[in-house]
Image 1 (cartoon, rainbow, N blue to C red):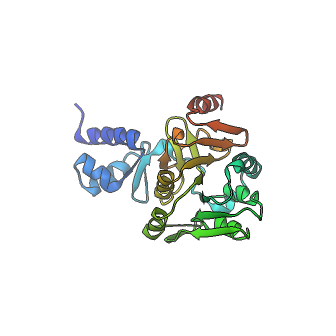
Image 2: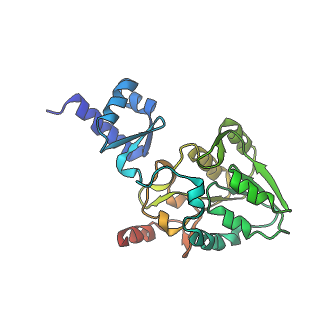
Image 3: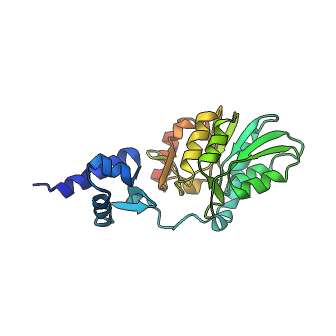
Amino acid sequence: MTSRKEQRVAALSDALGVHRVLHLREAASLLGVSLMTVRRDVAENPAQFAYLGGHIVHAANIEGEGPYDLAKAADRHAAAKRAASAHAFKHVHADETVFFDCGTTLVHLIDLIPDNLPITAVCYALNVADRLSRKPNISLVMLGGLYHASSGSFAGESGRETLSRLGINTAFLTAAGIDARRGATCANFHEAPIKMQVMDIAQRNFLVTDNSKIGRVRPAYFAALDAFDAIFTEDGVLGTGALSGFEATDAAE
């Protein structure tokens, strides 16, 4: 006979299969138990669950490479990131408002923007803002909030309030994980709400990444792959709904 604890663990696993990430309070409400009980169930089942900053994820969805580090990521797959950015660059148009996500990929895209091209650029990461500020014809909007040193980015209500008042023509997004079934994911939970809000606002959403991210799943989900107008890697364009291409790549690795 299945015990109550086993039933809770099974229910939590099923819920994570649907939602990918659950806040501790959401899990407690779903299971009808206390926060302490959820914490204990997670701690007693490390092969199934991981507890990250108030959020619960499947342990299998956590990569072994450790926390995201901006300085280390800057040198990783740089050539592939430059090539992916070159494919995406044709979607940067004069006199439009363009959102640039955080991370180290899109600095290569910014470097391709001619000094005489006028755009309004929106960002929330220091390294991205620094690159944008070097372009004389770019009007820069920096979203504020609490600073997160690991990704060099800001997040919070003030930044999201500013974002809600903007019109975005084109958004360039990045991801730390791309999976045919689990979609686009990132390493830091504070990034996901910004990415999701931008995608709701923007007229066009493009994912710019490199092939090393394919088949990986990171803790914070933010979009299904078919939510993007196009996906750019170093190999070129993978259009909307190109899930079969990702599945074939996953199977080959």
